[in-house]
Image (cartoon, rainbow, N blue to C red; front, top):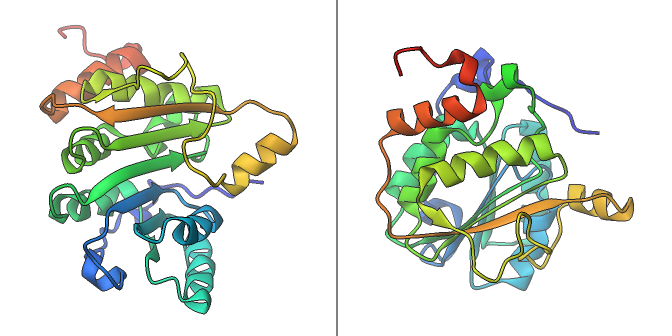
Length: 235
């Protein structure tokens, strides 16, 4: 059972200053895998062992899950792993902008909270400004991985990424959905889906060399597709 919080509530609109990598990891200059909406963090906990030459950061808006995940991290002394509480759309953009060039090499958004109704679209984790911050932090060929078990959740994310123009699908991937998870460890939600033989919709993107569009242009293009009734008639 997913336990949602409303990211638009006043409490979650307060910006947080997130620590830089040298405050999070024992070896700060390793490549970083950022998992946005990591929930209880079990996937990253396992990945930190399987990929010890990477740093793994999970961010999550539900503070109790972050506290529990961080306790596991401390108990097991995984110094290439950290969890942070934040609203990704409020606090993550500044952190991404401060990263050294090409340190961020993988971003994943896996099974985000299903705000699939159009009237809830501003609650979705993938917003134009966050996507542009991710694209700015990723060097060409670095990856963005998305997956969900709800089509109404993953399709708007795919639409937004493709409108951005900063990412390409690997030529070898099947369309419209990738057949498997490129990560060696499934999330807890993914295990739940697999056990019940339910579908998971996956897309892997790689940063290309295209410049970022202007935020206002991307927001308008996305609104035309995602909620055309709200687009002013003079546009």
